[in-house]
Image (cartoon, rainbow, N blue to C red; front, side, top):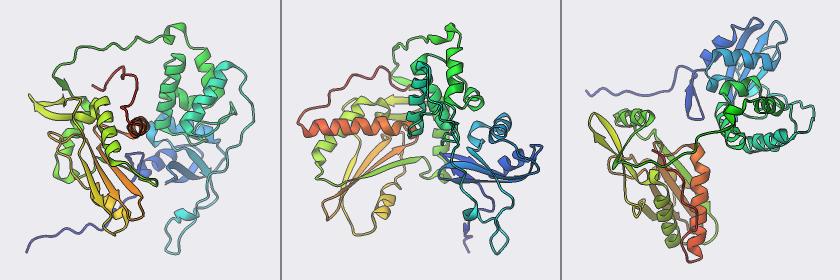
Amino acid sequence: DTPVLHYLGRTDDQIKLRGIRIEPTDIETTLTRHPTITTTRVIVRNQRLIAYYMSNGQPAQESLRDFAARLLPSHMVPTDFVAIDAFPLTPSGKLDRNALPDPAPVAVTGRAPITDTQRQLCDLFGAVLDREVADIDADFFALGGHSLSSIRLISRVRSTFGVNLLLGDVFDHPTVAGVAALVDGAPTATLTRPELVASQRPELVPVSAAQERMLVVDRLPETGVAYNYPLAFTVLADFDVEAFAAAVRDVVARHESLRTVFVEHGTGFAQHILAPDTSAPIDILDDDGTPVDQQIERMTAHRFDLTHDTPLRITIIRHPDRTTTVVLLLHHITTDEWSDAPLLTDLHHAYTARLAGHPPHWKPLPVQYA
Protein backbone atom coordinates (compact mmCIF):
# COMPACT_ATOMS: atom_id res chain seq x y z
CA ASP A 1 0.00 0.00 0.00
CA THR A 2 3.04 2.28 0.25
CA PRO A 3 3.46 4.41 -2.88
CA VAL A 4 6.73 3.79 -4.71
CA LEU A 5 8.26 6.21 -7.19
CA HIS A 6 10.37 4.62 -9.94
CA TYR A 7 12.90 7.01 -11.49
CA LEU A 8 13.29 6.03 -15.15
CA GLY A 9 15.32 8.92 -16.51
CA ARG A 10 15.04 12.45 -17.85
CA THR A 11 12.57 13.65 -20.43
CA ASP A 12 14.82 16.52 -21.47
CA ASP A 13 18.46 16.77 -22.57
CA GLN A 14 19.88 18.67 -19.61
CA ILE A 15 23.65 18.31 -19.40
CA LYS A 16 26.23 18.99 -16.72
CA LEU A 17 29.46 20.63 -17.82
CA ARG A 18 32.23 21.53 -15.37
CA GLY A 19 29.78 21.34 -12.49
CA ILE A 20 27.10 23.55 -14.08
CA ARG A 21 23.77 22.24 -15.34
CA ILE A 22 22.87 23.52 -18.80
CA GLU A 23 19.74 23.22 -20.91
CA PRO A 24 20.95 22.80 -24.52
CA THR A 25 17.55 23.91 -25.82
CA ASP A 26 18.10 27.34 -24.26
CA ILE A 27 21.31 27.71 -26.25
CA GLU A 28 19.71 26.35 -29.41
CA THR A 29 16.77 28.74 -29.17
CA THR A 30 19.14 31.67 -28.72
CA LEU A 31 21.36 30.69 -31.64
CA THR A 32 18.42 30.37 -34.03
CA ARG A 33 17.81 34.07 -33.46
CA HIS A 34 20.92 34.67 -35.59
CA PRO A 35 19.73 35.87 -39.02
CA THR A 36 21.54 33.12 -40.95
CA ILE A 37 20.96 30.08 -38.71
CA THR A 38 17.92 27.93 -39.42
CA THR A 39 18.44 24.91 -37.15
CA THR A 40 20.93 24.06 -34.43
CA ARG A 41 21.76 21.30 -31.96
CA VAL A 42 24.12 21.62 -29.01
CA ILE A 43 26.03 18.71 -27.44
CA VAL A 44 28.94 18.14 -25.07
CA ARG A 45 31.94 16.22 -26.37
CA ASN A 46 35.26 15.91 -24.56
CA GLN A 47 34.14 18.52 -22.02
CA ARG A 48 33.53 21.05 -24.81
CA LEU A 49 30.21 22.62 -25.70
CA ILE A 50 29.72 22.24 -29.47
CA ALA A 51 26.97 23.86 -31.54
CA TYR A 52 26.06 22.20 -34.86
CA TYR A 53 23.98 24.35 -37.17
CA MET A 54 22.35 24.59 -40.58
CA SER A 55 22.23 28.03 -42.13
CA ASN A 56 21.24 29.96 -45.23
CA GLY A 57 24.61 31.69 -45.31
CA GLN A 58 28.20 31.18 -44.22
CA PRO A 59 28.66 33.02 -40.90
CA ALA A 60 32.18 33.03 -39.49
CA GLN A 61 32.70 31.06 -36.28
CA GLU A 62 33.97 34.21 -34.57
CA SER A 63 30.80 36.12 -35.43
CA LEU A 64 28.63 33.30 -34.07
CA ARG A 65 30.60 33.20 -30.84
CA ASP A 66 30.31 36.98 -30.48
CA PHE A 67 26.57 36.72 -31.11
CA ALA A 68 26.22 33.98 -28.47
CA ALA A 69 28.39 35.86 -25.96
CA ARG A 70 26.12 38.91 -26.17
CA LEU A 71 22.99 36.89 -25.36
CA LEU A 72 24.11 33.99 -23.18
CA PRO A 73 25.96 33.56 -19.87
CA SER A 74 29.62 32.78 -20.45
CA HIS A 75 29.29 29.13 -19.37
CA MET A 76 26.63 28.60 -22.06
CA VAL A 77 28.66 29.98 -24.98
CA PRO A 78 29.74 27.07 -27.22
CA THR A 79 33.43 26.46 -27.70
CA ASP A 80 32.98 25.35 -31.31
CA PHE A 81 30.45 26.04 -34.06
CA VAL A 82 30.20 23.41 -36.79
CA ALA A 83 28.21 23.94 -40.00
CA ILE A 84 26.55 20.84 -41.46
CA ASP A 85 24.27 20.22 -44.42
CA ALA A 86 21.90 17.88 -42.57
CA PHE A 87 21.65 16.37 -39.10
CA PRO A 88 22.36 12.62 -38.97
CA LEU A 89 19.44 10.59 -37.65
CA THR A 90 19.06 7.16 -36.10
CA PRO A 91 16.65 4.60 -37.64
CA SER A 92 14.05 5.80 -35.13
CA GLY A 93 14.36 9.36 -36.40
CA LYS A 94 16.28 10.79 -33.44
CA LEU A 95 19.49 12.81 -33.63
CA ASP A 96 22.48 10.49 -33.99
CA ARG A 97 24.92 12.33 -31.76
CA ASN A 98 27.74 9.86 -32.38
CA ALA A 99 27.57 10.57 -36.12
CA LEU A 100 28.07 14.31 -35.69
CA PRO A 101 31.52 15.28 -36.98
CA ASP A 102 34.28 16.54 -34.73
CA PRO A 103 35.15 20.22 -35.12
CA ALA A 104 37.77 20.85 -37.78
CA PRO A 105 41.37 21.32 -36.59
CA VAL A 106 42.24 24.87 -35.73
CA ALA A 107 43.64 26.79 -38.70
CA VAL A 108 46.55 28.97 -37.64
CA THR A 109 48.59 31.58 -39.43
CA GLY A 110 51.82 30.68 -37.71
CA ARG A 111 52.65 34.22 -36.58
CA ALA A 112 55.18 33.90 -33.80
CA PRO A 113 55.25 36.28 -30.82
CA ILE A 114 57.40 39.36 -31.32
CA THR A 115 57.01 41.47 -28.18
CA ASP A 116 57.71 40.50 -24.58
CA THR A 117 54.00 40.83 -23.83
CA GLN A 118 53.10 38.40 -26.60
CA ARG A 119 55.74 35.90 -25.48
CA GLN A 120 54.52 36.00 -21.89
CA LEU A 121 50.92 35.64 -23.02
CA CYS A 122 51.80 32.60 -25.15
CA ASP A 123 53.13 31.04 -21.96
CA LEU A 124 49.98 32.00 -20.03
CA PHE A 125 47.69 30.66 -22.76
CA GLY A 126 49.69 27.43 -22.82
CA ALA A 127 49.60 27.03 -19.03
CA VAL A 128 45.83 27.51 -18.88
CA LEU A 129 45.11 25.28 -21.89
CA ASP A 130 47.76 22.68 -21.00
CA ARG A 131 49.24 22.77 -24.49
CA GLU A 132 51.93 24.69 -26.35
CA VAL A 133 50.74 27.96 -27.85
CA ALA A 134 53.17 29.57 -30.29
CA ASP A 135 50.77 31.34 -32.68
CA ILE A 136 49.57 34.77 -31.61
CA ASP A 137 46.50 34.50 -33.87
CA ALA A 138 45.26 31.13 -32.57
CA ASP A 139 41.80 31.41 -31.00
CA PHE A 140 41.71 30.66 -27.26
CA PHE A 141 38.33 28.93 -27.52
CA ALA A 142 39.18 26.99 -30.65
CA LEU A 143 42.21 25.66 -28.77
CA GLY A 144 39.93 24.25 -26.06
CA GLY A 145 39.28 27.24 -23.83
CA HIS A 146 35.96 27.81 -22.11
CA SER A 147 34.42 30.20 -19.59
CA LEU A 148 36.19 28.71 -16.55
CA SER A 149 39.58 28.63 -18.24
CA SER A 150 38.94 32.23 -19.35
CA ILE A 151 38.67 33.19 -15.69
CA ARG A 152 41.95 31.42 -15.00
CA LEU A 153 43.57 33.32 -17.86
CA ILE A 154 42.24 36.61 -16.50
CA SER A 155 43.68 35.77 -13.09
CA ARG A 156 47.10 34.98 -14.56
CA VAL A 157 47.08 38.16 -16.64
CA ARG A 158 46.30 40.14 -13.49
CA SER A 159 49.12 38.44 -11.57
CA THR A 160 51.64 38.84 -14.40
CA PHE A 161 50.83 42.29 -15.76
CA GLY A 162 48.63 43.90 -13.09
CA VAL A 163 45.93 44.47 -15.70
CA ASN A 164 42.31 43.75 -14.82
CA LEU A 165 40.57 42.22 -17.82
CA LEU A 166 36.87 41.45 -18.00
CA LEU A 167 35.46 38.13 -19.16
CA GLY A 168 34.00 39.92 -22.16
CA ASP A 169 37.49 41.10 -23.12
CA VAL A 170 38.60 37.51 -23.65
CA PHE A 171 35.50 36.70 -25.71
CA ASP A 172 35.97 39.84 -27.82
CA HIS A 173 39.76 39.41 -28.20
CA PRO A 174 40.41 35.65 -27.87
CA THR A 175 43.94 35.60 -29.32
CA VAL A 176 47.36 36.31 -27.88
CA ALA A 177 47.63 39.27 -30.24
CA GLY A 178 44.26 40.60 -29.10
CA VAL A 179 44.95 40.24 -25.38
CA ALA A 180 48.45 41.68 -25.82
CA ALA A 181 46.95 44.80 -27.39
CA LEU A 182 44.64 45.18 -24.38
CA VAL A 183 47.50 44.70 -21.93
CA ASP A 184 49.84 47.11 -23.71
CA GLY A 185 47.06 49.67 -24.06
CA ALA A 186 45.85 49.49 -20.47
CA PRO A 187 46.03 52.78 -18.56
CA THR A 188 48.76 53.02 -15.98
CA ALA A 189 46.22 53.33 -13.18
CA THR A 190 45.14 49.72 -13.64
CA LEU A 191 48.64 48.33 -13.30
CA THR A 192 48.74 48.41 -9.49
CA ARG A 193 46.74 46.44 -7.00
CA PRO A 194 46.47 47.02 -3.27
CA GLU A 195 48.56 44.55 -1.31
CA LEU A 196 46.62 41.99 0.69
CA VAL A 197 47.05 42.61 4.41
CA ALA A 198 46.15 40.12 7.12
CA SER A 199 43.47 41.34 9.52
CA GLN A 200 42.52 40.25 13.02
CA ARG A 201 40.42 37.11 12.79
CA PRO A 202 37.43 36.60 15.09
CA GLU A 203 36.84 33.24 16.74
CA LEU A 204 33.83 32.66 14.50
CA VAL A 205 34.40 33.72 10.90
CA PRO A 206 31.34 34.69 8.82
CA VAL A 207 30.53 32.41 5.90
CA SER A 208 30.38 33.71 2.35
CA ALA A 209 27.06 33.99 0.53
CA ALA A 210 27.99 30.99 -1.62
CA GLN A 211 28.86 28.93 1.45
CA GLU A 212 25.60 29.85 3.15
CA ARG A 213 23.58 28.76 0.12
CA MET A 214 25.49 25.49 0.00
CA LEU A 215 24.98 24.85 3.71
CA VAL A 216 21.23 25.37 3.39
CA VAL A 217 20.95 23.11 0.34
CA ASP A 218 23.26 20.51 1.90
CA ARG A 219 20.77 19.98 4.73
CA LEU A 220 17.96 19.02 2.38
CA PRO A 221 17.41 15.23 2.36
CA GLU A 222 17.30 15.10 -1.43
CA THR A 223 20.77 16.65 -1.70
CA GLY A 224 22.37 13.40 -0.55
CA VAL A 225 26.06 13.35 -1.48
CA ALA A 226 25.78 15.76 -4.41
CA TYR A 227 28.44 18.03 -2.87
CA ASN A 228 30.96 15.25 -2.32
CA TYR A 229 34.20 15.85 -4.22
CA PRO A 230 36.27 12.65 -4.54
CA LEU A 231 39.86 12.35 -5.75
CA ALA A 232 41.40 8.90 -6.16
CA PHE A 233 44.81 7.70 -7.27
CA THR A 234 46.75 4.45 -7.27
CA VAL A 235 50.27 4.09 -5.87
CA LEU A 236 52.20 1.39 -7.75
CA ALA A 237 55.27 1.34 -5.52
CA ASP A 238 55.48 0.50 -1.81
CA PHE A 239 53.28 2.87 0.16
CA ASP A 240 54.25 4.10 3.64
CA VAL A 241 50.97 4.59 5.47
CA GLU A 242 52.56 6.22 8.51
CA ALA A 243 54.44 8.75 6.38
CA PHE A 244 51.27 9.48 4.42
CA ALA A 245 49.23 9.98 7.60
CA ALA A 246 51.86 12.43 8.85
CA ALA A 247 51.75 14.22 5.49
CA VAL A 248 47.97 14.53 5.76
CA ARG A 249 48.38 16.13 9.20
CA ASP A 250 50.92 18.54 7.71
CA VAL A 251 48.57 19.57 4.90
CA VAL A 252 45.55 19.93 7.18
CA ALA A 253 47.60 22.13 9.51
CA ARG A 254 48.72 24.24 6.54
CA HIS A 255 45.26 24.77 5.02
CA GLU A 256 42.66 26.05 7.49
CA SER A 257 39.79 25.25 5.13
CA LEU A 258 40.54 21.53 5.62
CA ARG A 259 39.94 21.85 9.39
CA THR A 260 36.90 24.11 9.35
CA VAL A 261 33.45 23.15 10.59
CA PHE A 262 30.31 25.22 10.12
CA VAL A 263 28.14 26.05 13.10
CA GLU A 264 24.82 27.80 13.43
CA HIS A 265 25.30 31.35 14.63
CA GLY A 266 22.44 33.76 15.13
CA THR A 267 20.18 33.44 12.12
CA GLY A 268 22.84 31.92 9.88
CA PHE A 269 26.14 30.08 9.94
CA ALA A 270 29.74 30.78 10.86
CA GLN A 271 33.07 29.08 10.23
CA HIS A 272 34.81 27.56 13.24
CA ILE A 273 38.46 26.82 12.47
CA LEU A 274 39.83 23.93 14.49
CA ALA A 275 43.31 23.69 15.97
CA PRO A 276 46.31 23.05 13.68
CA ASP A 277 46.84 19.59 15.19
CA THR A 278 43.42 18.48 13.91
CA SER A 279 43.70 15.62 11.43
CA ALA A 280 41.37 14.17 8.84
CA PRO A 281 40.04 10.66 9.53
CA ILE A 282 41.91 7.92 7.67
CA ASP A 283 40.44 4.44 7.14
CA ILE A 284 42.76 1.61 6.07
CA LEU A 285 41.04 -1.30 4.36
CA ASP A 286 42.08 -4.45 2.54
CA ASP A 287 40.79 -5.08 -0.97
CA ASP A 288 37.53 -7.03 -0.64
CA GLY A 289 37.74 -8.56 -4.12
CA THR A 290 35.07 -6.42 -5.76
CA PRO A 291 36.01 -4.11 -8.66
CA VAL A 292 38.04 -1.15 -7.44
CA ASP A 293 35.62 1.41 -8.88
CA GLN A 294 32.81 -0.17 -6.84
CA GLN A 295 34.92 0.00 -3.69
CA ILE A 296 35.68 3.66 -4.38
CA GLU A 297 31.99 4.35 -4.96
CA ARG A 298 31.18 2.94 -1.54
CA MET A 299 33.89 5.05 0.09
CA THR A 300 32.56 8.22 -1.49
CA ALA A 301 28.96 7.62 -0.37
CA HIS A 302 29.69 9.14 3.05
CA ARG A 303 27.48 12.11 3.87
CA PHE A 304 29.29 14.87 5.72
CA ASP A 305 27.83 16.53 8.80
CA LEU A 306 29.62 19.84 8.43
CA THR A 307 28.75 20.93 11.96
CA HIS A 308 31.12 18.23 13.26
CA ASP A 309 33.00 16.64 10.35
CA THR A 310 36.07 18.22 8.86
CA PRO A 311 35.50 18.44 5.08
CA LEU A 312 38.16 15.84 4.28
CA ARG A 313 38.29 12.12 4.95
CA ILE A 314 40.62 9.53 3.46
CA THR A 315 40.38 5.83 2.68
CA ILE A 316 43.40 3.68 1.85
CA ILE A 317 42.71 0.39 0.04
CA ARG A 318 45.54 -2.17 0.08
CA HIS A 319 45.49 -4.59 -2.87
CA PRO A 320 46.97 -8.12 -3.03
CA ASP A 321 49.44 -7.05 -5.75
CA ARG A 322 50.98 -4.55 -3.26
CA THR A 323 49.53 -1.54 -5.03
CA THR A 324 47.48 0.94 -3.02
CA THR A 325 44.47 3.05 -3.91
CA VAL A 326 44.08 6.30 -2.01
CA VAL A 327 40.68 7.98 -1.97
CA LEU A 328 40.43 11.60 -0.83
CA LEU A 329 36.84 12.60 -0.18
CA LEU A 330 36.29 16.32 0.22
CA HIS A 331 33.17 18.42 0.53
CA HIS A 332 32.66 20.97 -2.22
CA ILE A 333 32.33 23.74 0.37
CA THR A 334 36.08 23.61 0.86
CA THR A 335 37.40 22.78 -2.60
CA ASP A 336 36.87 22.92 -6.35
CA GLU A 337 38.76 21.94 -9.49
CA TRP A 338 41.16 24.86 -9.10
CA SER A 339 42.19 23.51 -5.69
CA ASP A 340 43.25 20.08 -6.96
CA ALA A 341 46.75 21.09 -8.04
CA PRO A 342 47.83 22.96 -4.86
CA LEU A 343 46.30 20.30 -2.61
CA LEU A 344 47.96 17.36 -4.36
CA THR A 345 51.23 19.26 -4.76
CA ASP A 346 51.38 20.02 -1.03
CA LEU A 347 50.42 16.45 -0.16
CA HIS A 348 53.15 15.05 -2.42
CA HIS A 349 55.71 17.49 -0.99
CA ALA A 350 54.79 16.59 2.59
CA TYR A 351 54.80 12.83 1.89
CA THR A 352 58.23 13.05 0.25
CA ALA A 353 59.55 14.96 3.26
CA ARG A 354 58.08 12.48 5.75
CA LEU A 355 59.64 9.58 3.83
CA ALA A 356 62.96 11.36 4.32
CA GLY A 357 62.30 11.58 8.05
CA HIS A 358 61.50 15.25 8.50
CA PRO A 359 58.51 17.60 8.23
CA PRO A 360 58.01 19.56 5.02
CA HIS A 361 59.77 22.89 4.67
CA TRP A 362 57.48 25.40 3.01
CA LYS A 363 56.80 29.09 3.28
CA PRO A 364 53.74 30.02 5.36
CA LEU A 365 50.69 30.83 3.27
CA PRO A 366 50.28 34.62 3.03
CA VAL A 367 46.49 34.39 3.34
CA GLN A 368 43.82 31.83 4.21
CA TYR A 369 40.28 31.55 2.90
CA ALA A 370 37.76 33.58 4.89
